[in-house]
Image (cartoon, rainbow, N blue to C red; front, side, top):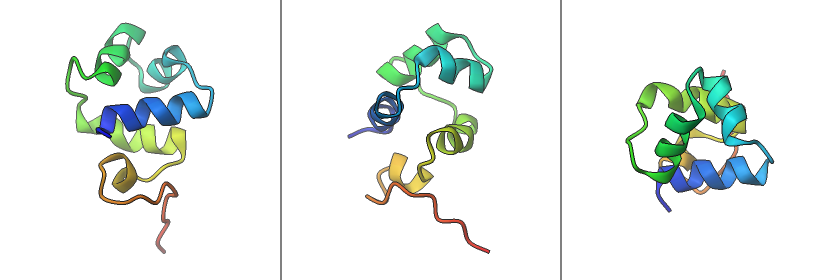
Length: 74
């Protein structure tokens, strides 16, 4: 699964709309939709905010880990 598909899957799983996610990121819903569909490449600056909103690790989104949970190191 590509990063955009994982983001869409997690967003749907948590009943968050594209509009809610776009508002959270400070962008238009149409722009966010294009990122999720893979039409446009999502800038990496959105990744930390998306991970926090969805409560998943960046490693999971990027395919480096199957572990969804965020690992907070101190």
